[in-house]
Image (cartoon, rainbow, N blue to C red; front, side, top):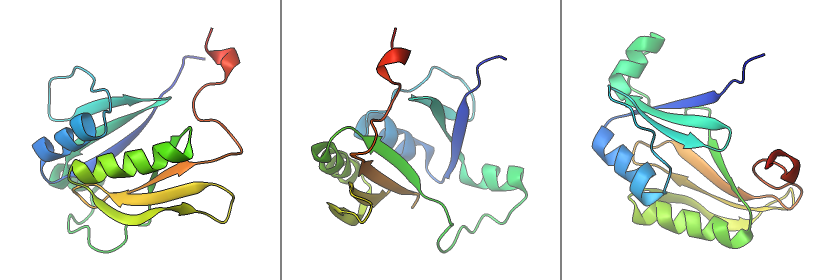
Length: 139
């Protein structure tokens, strides 16, 4: 079986602002690509940014995007300190702090920010597992 990649695509209203937020603000590595979308490599998946109205049209849904969208994205980090660092970076890059970093019921530490288009991201540290490939996968 050929390797597969999971991709998350976010509709964005201002491509330049969104690219700056993810590339410069959060430090996501941008992939070289010429076209209407922008791609970032993540650990085991890709993040794609696509014009909001075009993505709604492609999915055949209304582009108003109001209210809670029923989805959050998560950025899992290796330490409690990284949770606060990523939240701070997101706010400095133009995001909005939604929930400050705090102890959570499942034993970890997390907080939430919204990107410039209102997509909710949880930044979390989980003491029960480590993010990324295991040592055996890093040969």
